[in-house]
Image (tube, rainbow, N blue to C red; front, top):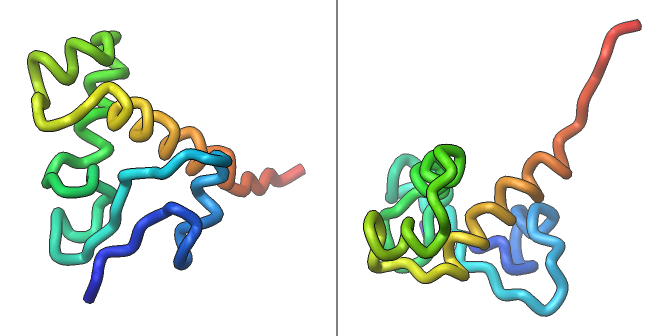
Length: 94
């Protein structure tokens, strides 16, 4: 099965509504059991988000932890998470 991007094609298109921005987040069932990863790597969005959560600057994430990434890749991981939360439906009982 081929990887799916969230660049406006396929079922994940609704998660990425950033005009004029190409995303590098891919979902491939053969890589990390289908967890979202940065294209061309096996680096999961989750791993990058954990570093962001720790308050590590984007440039340090690239320089110290993931030199295969760019600062734009790190920003796209954050954007992916933002769009995922934005598309989440909350059902509350009264």
